[in-house]
Length: 172
Image 1 (tube, helix red, strand yellow):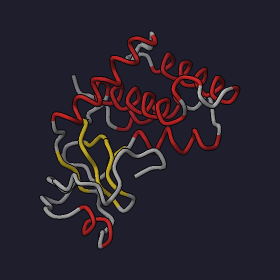
Image 2 (spheres, rainbow, N blue to C red):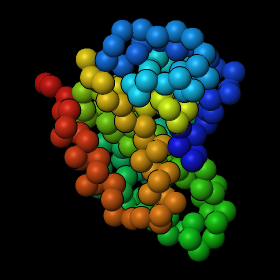
Image 3 (cartoon, rainbow, N blue to C red):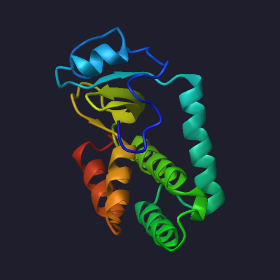
Image 4 (spheres, rainbow, N blue to C red):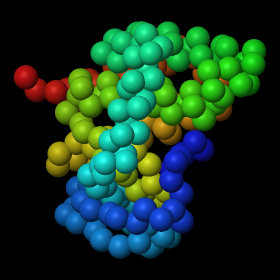
């Protein structure tokens, strides 16, 4: 999906489920991405994907990042970006940093907006994302972080993530 995606369209994981916004779609990721109609397709997480998110959340806890505080996520991301600019291997390198803060943003959205984690396939490939019930839009945190990482952009996390929460707030 993004520059730092874990899954490409040729990966072995081919299990698709729910077509976001239009019922179900079953088949091969290659078929979905090559003949894609423009609508993202999602499926529920499997145990390995849940474990990936849990490991990311644990890593964030070890770093002292409060996932419920968007400003804390932003500050930690900006600091990791600065360290990486000084030393490309800092904090495990770009792939680890992008994955860590994509999971932070995704988990924040899962906790504070009416979205839930899923595996999303679109014209760009397959990756972890967030979907909302009866909505035809998805958010792929790895794309949000990866694109801004490549541009060296800092200071964006609180503004962007707060906006996304505001678009689909969790109802009490």
